[in-house]
Length: 321
Length: 127
Image (cartoon, rainbow over all chains, first blue to last red):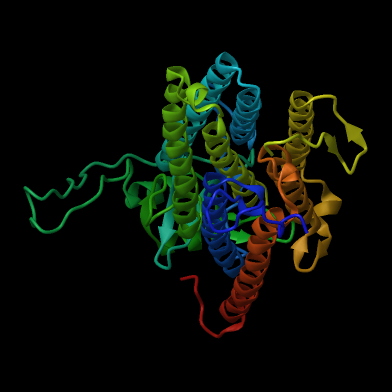
């Protein structure tokens, strides 16, 4: 009932439908529609994943790096990023709470910490993109676009191309527009040619091939030496790192969705930081003190929490499930 | 929201003295859930991976439920939906839930069909 009761005059304005101010209501409209956009992306991700359910890359094996540390730490850095974003969400609520009590200095400090948290998050995401694009082990791609990765037979660890590729002489030079056809470009050449990898593979009996196929135990299928030797004949090119067309970690759609979804989310965080900064300076200048209320802080807070909310879902569907 | 805060969470099981206390309490709860998720994600207990329910591993269902729990507390306490008018809250929450359930149902069923076409068709996709 409470929503249908109007407060006195109906037509002269000044009413608040649903007890929410105009600005807050519009922020909620925007958030609902943006939530649907993200849901569309995640549903598309789910679509592609269910379509290739038996060959999809395993996220634990892709995101294993932590800055400044060597070794294999699955999930650790993403978990850290999640904590950072939740923490900055908390400082944002504290800023809103301080705003309700008209405590200007507290609002300033809490907004400051929120912005710092956001910057750390975006920086971490940039680092994660960089690591993902650079790649670590390298792989071969077959004619049908399937990825062949390498494993050391004795230890069961992943083998990088640099561990076994055999340097051969007589390299081909990179095709550039100035020395070849002006209308055809070529990306940077991989560190090893296909021939070098194949020769190195044949010379080193300790290396086995791992295909994209996920077996009963939920691991990627490991071929034996004979199968591996047969399989490597199908390879057509060397892949290092990931971009929109090739992806050494497995299915190329995985990289496409990674760039698209985390990129779109990262862009939201970035614009959230900018909006937070504007409000931050307005608070310092005393705009809301003069206005008599800190509702703008609450509105930008809604946006900031929404970005956190989206990350919670991206974290689950990209890294956990 | 402009008036006062509701300070109870877990259906009144936990009641906080002030809004600030509630914020820290909710943070502790969210961190706790995230830690459970990460630990399950790293160790992947055998039993939860082997059993599947409605075509998905039990572990993945646990992840999705924990995510929805987290989303609930972020929306209810950080975005103050708990203090908003009931009809505003319902309009905000149920609209996306309905549309997303519909969309995921359609896309996942279709994707599963395509998966079977790839698998059982007489064409090889690995050459």
